[in-house]
Amino acid sequence: MTRKSWSVGLLGTAFALIIVLPQIARDSWDPAVRLAVGSQSGVRDVIEEKLGEVPLTATRGHDGQIFFLMAHDPFLANPESIALILDRPTYRYQRIALPLLAWPAAAVSERAIVWALVLIGVVAVFVGTSSLSDYAERCGMTPLAGLAFVLNPGVVSALLITGSGVLAWAFGAAAMSAVVRRRRLTAIGLFTAAVLTRESMLLVAAGASLWMWRTERARALGYAFVPFLGAILWGLYVRWRLPGEQATDFLELGFPMRGIVSAVSDWISQGLTLDTVMGLAMVGVAVLLVVQFVKSPSLLAFGAVGFSGLAVFLTENVWISWFDSSRALIPATSAVIVGIIGSRVREFPDESVAGPSPS
Image (tube, rainbow, N blue to C red; front, side, top):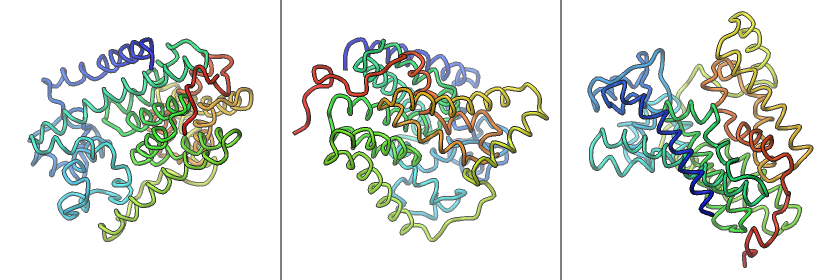
């Protein structure tokens, strides 16, 4: 990466700190606010046994509380202690990368795990912004286009609740940068890490594979196959360690368009609220990305356009809240912003820019 890319990454990190630090400061510098523990959460008592009294959010809370507990046992050595008290443990443990990275902090203290999760989010912003900046620069755009990583409502909302979306997209953006630099093995490893952070990132890996298919068919399949295989193997391990999936009343995917149609009805009844504005904006992002993909099928467009298809299947539970819909479409939003900044992206960077082909 160039010095300009690192500089843009630092700028993005500063923005992330502006989001994160005031939130923690308001609660007497208690990082547990970032866990978004729900007042009605089924794991609230367990978390308060470990951390004492913590700041609470309404209803069931968000992902941070789950990742905090998973960091105690990422390899499912003792499923009864953590995994089986979670809702949908198999689904939760499919997204293992974030709690796994925080796991070493468990040897220090409970509070250290929370700080580790906070730090991982901030570092992920730096990596993701720098990587997207490097990608943009190598494709003939201003390096400042990398700020599309952090100037993304999904990234902001994920930072606020310690969600996995920031880390997943950071891995994905770094993989995109590796692809245009012809670092095939590095890209495959990063795509695999992205998929083990959030399974929907397989869409990004598959898109990159299709983009490469046009010029390097013998090598292209690896970009998607290896991450897919990694997710399958880890999923089999999780299912071996856990006795079965627990029932849930919440589903993220459903029949095509049903979620959007139901959400529109709710938005109309609510009037002009943040959920309404952001929900309509996310629908616009999904549509605009398809238009950009048709007009300029760049690597980034290929990697993100699958999320436009995913948007069609998201349920009302996802669309009704801007926190959820924006996080579900993080790569799509960044891709649209980059597409607007760079009106024309070269499909295949010059060898002088991308570096030598892998041996």
